[in-house]
Length: 269
Image 1: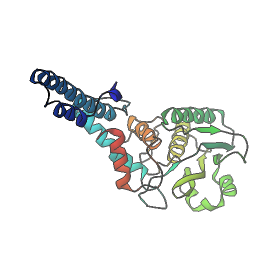
Image 2: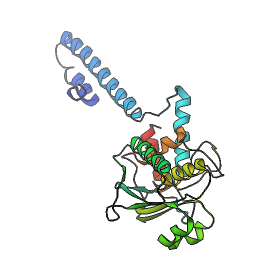
Image 3: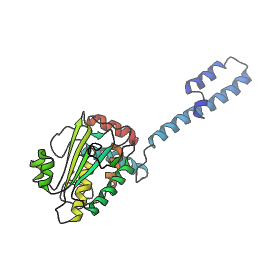
Image 4: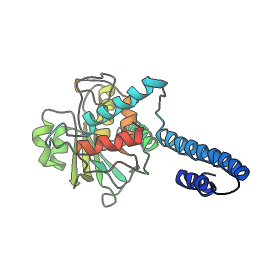
């Protein structure tokens, strides 16, 4: 119906053009013009209100609480998505613009493989722009390697990570072109005794490989928590920033100011 109604300017012109007619007709037309003007204005307001509600939060709050939750998500996204735990400190957005095709190598651990499939399904469900992670069985088809095994074996396969692997039981590495992720690898030390720690490392490193590369000092319930952790599920904030990174309006290679502007548009701020 919105497209069949005249614009506000046309409504006003309709009123002015009919001022020269018979006074009784003028009154009728003026009344109709006023109704049309109000209708146009209401439609414009409704369209603006609807555009701000396009993105539904996983947890919806009322009034100011909803506003401040959305504002917090912008800051949370910037903390995790811009910059990196290791290496480059460029505050630029990174993401895959193609599907992530994963091949698993190393020790075959059925429990850890089941956990991997669970994480992949969660990420795919959160993606808003069609991005998907797929498991493949061929090196030529894959663009991402998950290695579950010992540090020595990983070093033989990926010798460039020897310095980092000495201090870490979990690690991810990415290759990018203009901050678009093209390929990468992930390591989880399967020789650790704690299965919960291995589950945590697998979820953390795979999620960071999406382009969410920073650890954070606060939020102990987050998969990105910097201190030693056994968190094996996403917090609500974690889920939201995965959804926002893989939203159709978010792209790789954006500065912090651009990222904030896009997030504010998505979130209706």
